[in-house]
Image 1 (cartoon, rainbow, N blue to C red):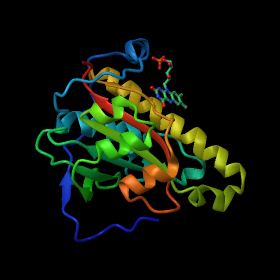
Image 2: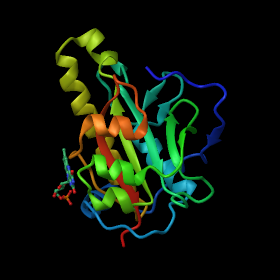
Image 3: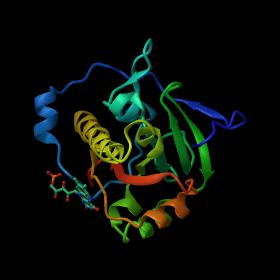
Amino acid sequence: MPEIDSQAPVIRLPEPCLKGNLSLEEAITRRRSVRSFSTEAVTPAQLSRVLWAAQGITDMGRDLRAVPSAGATYPLEVYVVCGQDGVAGIGAGVYRYHPARHSLTLHLGGDFRADLARAALSQGCVARAPLTIVIGAYFTRTTRGYGQRGEMYVHIEVGHAGQNIYLQAAALGLATVAVGAFRDQAVREALHLEADCQPLYLMPLGKTA
Ligand SMILES: Cc1cc2nc3c(=O)[nH]c(=O)nc-3n(C[C@H](O)[C@H](O)[C@H](O)COP(=O)(O)O)c2cc1C
C-alpha cells in the first residue's frame, strides 16, 4: 500500500469544473481510441477534470468517487507519467493522484515516457503523448472482503475508470486510448511501483495530432 509521503511537495490541481459544452450523448458518440498525439501541452484544468473523472471524490461527506467500486473498497491508484512540457507548469515526472486532496505528489522526477513505452511493447502512443495516465490496483483492498471474486470486481472497476477518462477526454476535445498490452513487471520497474501494485491500464492523453 503506498504511504502518503508527508514531505513530498503537493501540487494542488484546479477545482474540477462541473459544466461542459458537450452532452453525454455527444461525448459517447465522439469517443474514439486515438494513437497519434500532438506535442501541445495539456492544461492543468484539463488534467484536473480527467483525474476527477477517473477517481475524484463526488460525495465529500461519504468519501464516494466518480467511479463505482465494489463495497467502496477503492483498489485503484492513479499515476500520471508526464513528459517535459506535457502539462503546462508541471515538470516531467511520475505523479501520484490523491483523490481526497484532488492533488498530485511527485513520485519520480524525470521523463519516463520512453521507459513506459518500452514496457508497453514499444507502442508509439505511449512514447509520444504529452502524458499517460496509469491505473494500478491493490487487489487485496477488495479481495479482503470478497475473496477471489474481488479480483473480477477490480477488473470491472478499472473499466469504469477507463470509460470515464475516455468520455471526459472527448468532452474536453482531447483524445486517449486504453492500452492493455504491456508487461506488468516492466511497467512496475519503469515507474518504481510497489510489487503488489498491479498495473491494469495505460491511457495516453493529449490533443489529436
Ligand atoms: C482491454 C483493452 C485493451 C486495449 N489495449 C490496447 C492496446 O494495447 N493498444 C491499443 O492501441 N489499443 C488498445 N485498446 C483499444 C482498442 O483497440 C479499441 O478500443 C478498439 O480498436 C475499438 O476502437 P474505439 O475505442 O475507437 O471504439 C484496448 C482496448 C481495451 C478495451
